[in-house]
Length: 386
Image (cartoon, rainbow, N blue to C red; front, side):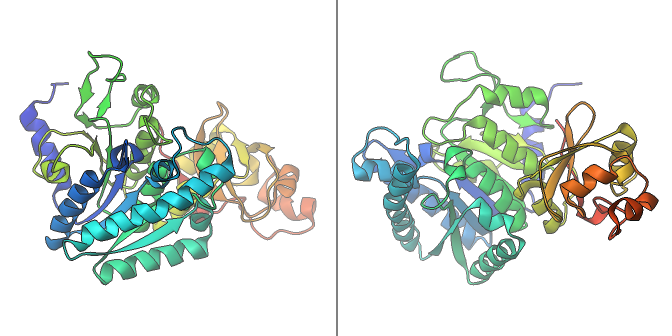
């Protein structure tokens, strides 16, 4: 394949960004913090840029890290605390400073902001997911910029794992955005860590997020936040499956957003693949944490992936985990690769009894038959593959 020139990349960037009117911008802790605490200059510059975009009729949703990093400086700690209560307390101290800094900065440009704090549990509940969606849409209709952060003061598991990159990807789908921009302290995705290897090569364009791309990212950790480059690649992979592009770029570069929209070669553009799922299917695929696993044979995998069929008990060979009716699970093939996510019509104990059997036998085995399918097609989603 012919290698793309700088002109090719510029044209691809301009074509990809053309028509993007609703943007989710995620900014990481390493960008927002300095030795003395919050980096006020960065917050001022980012607020100025986003305000200009908003005046040009863009819808802006900001996902901002920085509460824990801000709180560290304010409390007087030099190292990240290890215990969950200490992390939550530091976040509680820092979140007030963070939103106040944004409110003051955006206010200088006549813009109003609103703070929204979420946990994964909030988005895992379908009712609360829709409530969050409606709240954000209302704020956008009122011309107010939502500033979203993970609620670190009450979250437990989320503090120990992950970063706001995952939250940004979920929000991108929730608000039906056209583009996700992740601002970090590294210029782009490199084939190795540029802070260690001076010969590391920057990737301007990623057409498909393969296993090799994920392997590259796994060696580039974050300096302040909890995620690092790999979590950003996973976020890009999620939104790519929705047909939404992602750009990872250095948030410390002046006017970085304007440079990106001018087609200049900053950061890494991840091109989208696939068509948009419905909001509900994206919620099933990415927001819900699987409570179990169904191992299926090759015939069942083909029926689901190629023929668009429901999952029947006859194709299930094994069950892992204990779960109730309606629980989210992952379907894996005989090699152990997860290829689909869905909501089950039967509990794990019932599936254990009917696995490998035809649907006509369900009533005889269980004494009742509420559904022919273990997972109906409407509740089944194909997961993006590396």
